[in-house]
Image 1 (cartoon, rainbow, N blue to C red):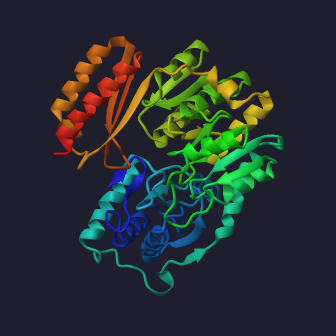
Image 2: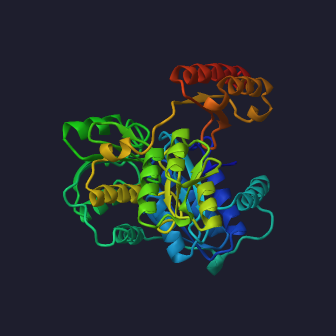
Image 3: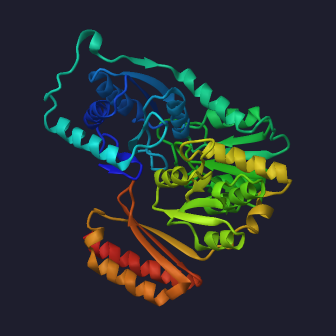
Length: 445
């Protein structure tokens, strides 16, 4: 039931109130704590699932503080700051009918796979027999559910403190909050730091999250940056744990380029621990070549900012991230934080006195990379789909040392993700197309 980022599916179909209630009970039984924090993004189904999950926690005798709408990294910060486990009701960048629940431990970090497996075992047991022991508490033993939406202020203050008194005066930012969880927090923080701000995607109605806006579709943002002669555009996703940027000419700057700029900046200032940056297998080969040219070590992990964080902590490193825009500044956060990434990017440009286009263009020379998402009936059979892997092996042989292929099941959606890199754009596109047809044949029949 757990994917790369918690539990996720169509709200009220794949993820029902009954399932959320049972999950809350399983979490309370597995994670020893007297209290939990629960937050959500702006989806219409959020209050429904949040209430059910919180009820499950309280049923088992633990208290819940409902912090309301809050970015995922904001909830992670509050979790670590108060030493309480937390649950975020969100499907991140997915379309609005989807929803999900991601879990954090008392350290503000996403749970380990082993802990998720324990929760899932207990969850299945409760679903099979809701009344099995232990007996639920009654009277004073029942958990309380309280609301404290003012807690988000602590996260806002944390974001402001990361800039160490520096200002963003003189920079014109177009901000797209994806009609999501950052719709109040991000504009407040940027204005407090003195930026000139034009805001879009900050009018959530419960159904418009990620709808033609945000990091998954920065088209409107790019147009507005150009038409308003702004310096930069910042696009968050629905729960604000990722960010992509747009330069003054409307070109998108993805997570690879952002991570490269941050790595070089930290290295120049002697703050890149271990002279190493952590990335995932999706990172463009051009990034790795650019870092090698500058003597920076690249450490690679599976997809997911949880894996990035684990690698950072294992070696005491400072910076890691994903092409999708998850960037982890480990000394400042326990997870990817889109707002923090935007602040650090704008601060970097102000300190250096350069434009985003000028700075990003010379950092990474991208190798042609083609990404294809293939909707399938089920991704469960990918590992045993011999024809798919035979095709992958043949294409890899054709590419030789000039490219690579990655085929994997999405951990958040019913998709197979195909990535092909080659020094030839045409060759990459042709290979990705062939693989898409084979995947559809094998897994969508």
